[in-house]
Image (cartoon, rainbow, N blue to C red; front, top):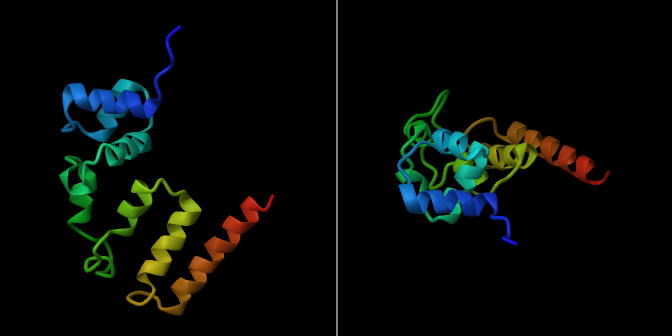
Length: 124
């Protein structure tokens, strides 16, 4: 009996055969997996975000409402996606990253609020 292949392996096998120039949404649709999983597979496949052909790269070239992320070495959303963090963890990262350049202590309070909820959810 054949061992079932993981979804990540399925995606990386696809990259081996077809390359990595297709949009994540198109690959996800063809393989019947989530777009997030395609991003995760790309990270494991060692394709840097700046080489991704789709709108993730275009989105990194601009910022809506301010400039507080433009000087960062790593965009918070790239870090969040590549590390497969959830909504609550992602918001903690976002607010802690920008607090000095945006809303000050209020952003730290927002981060703590999300962290409190994360603790609450995981304490049962």
